[in-house]
Image (cartoon, rainbow, N blue to C red; front, side, top):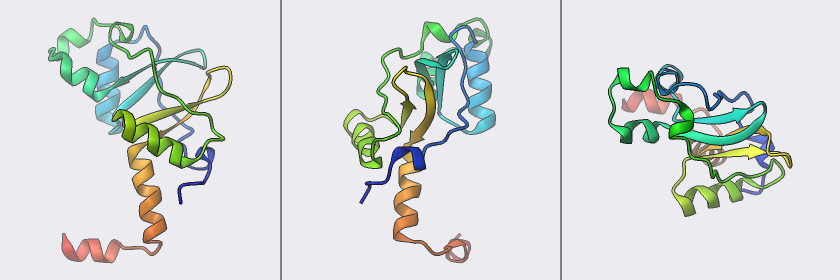
Length: 141
């Protein structure tokens, strides 16, 4: 059922930062864009990932984040997939490792996109309920 290619469903316009950015910048982007994951790149090459959980678990003040570099806390070993894999492979990585995002990279480890757990839920929901269900949501809210 999840045999469509990742490249058809990945977010291609990914918000990224580099290892020299500050955690204050990460925090601002996470809050303003309503996202939970920021891939860290050098040029186009994926070198790490920072998540909202990484920021939260530090327990620092907003002022302390301003002086901390992304490189101090980013996860450097990131599970990735290539764009020719199936969505089922993304779901497998997410569930086996309790991740919520999988960066999509090419053979040179350059970031091409990202697929999140929300993307997988949206995909499955659309398959199951192809009609517009807004009227039902509004009635029950």
